[in-house]
Length: 143
Image 1 (cartoon, rainbow, N blue to C red):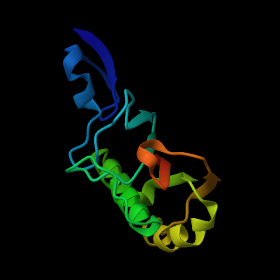
Image 2 (cartoon, helix red, strand yellow; image 1 turned 180 degrees about the horizontal axis):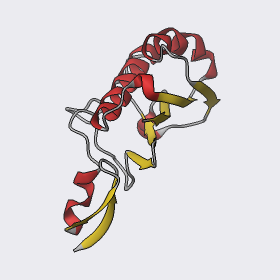
Image 3 (tube, helix red, strand yellow; image 1 turned 90 degrees about the vertical axis):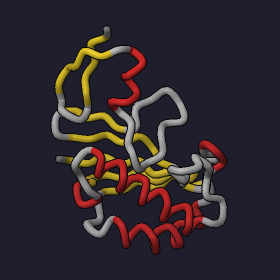
Image 4 (cartoon, rainbow, N blue to C red; image 1 turned 120 degrees about the horizontal axis):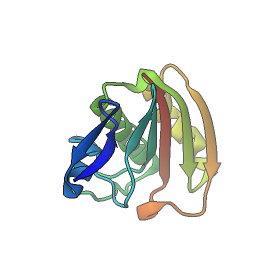
């Protein structure tokens, strides 16, 4: 048995080691592809790991274009937040990683429809993202 901190109910739980990942899994958002938590509560703040445009059913990256990937990332974030009883309205900070900063306008055109309360934001160009994604977004949300 292992004693771990559960994000969902902010309490320590005793569990079998094999069950640890289930405490942090979501039913709608894609599962973590590396050994990390998709999200973690610290008091009333939920820190969410970066999300790429993975299809939850196939775990494959949606490859068509930046707008489609941005929509999928925003949906995945929404599903992840929902799993913790939150919504996009609870997001206070986003960090956007783009493979090409010239995609910013296209990303903004999609982003503004999901993050209507306009949380604080940082946008960064990077050379490569996991699964060769065009975009990755991480969020911080407040309960």
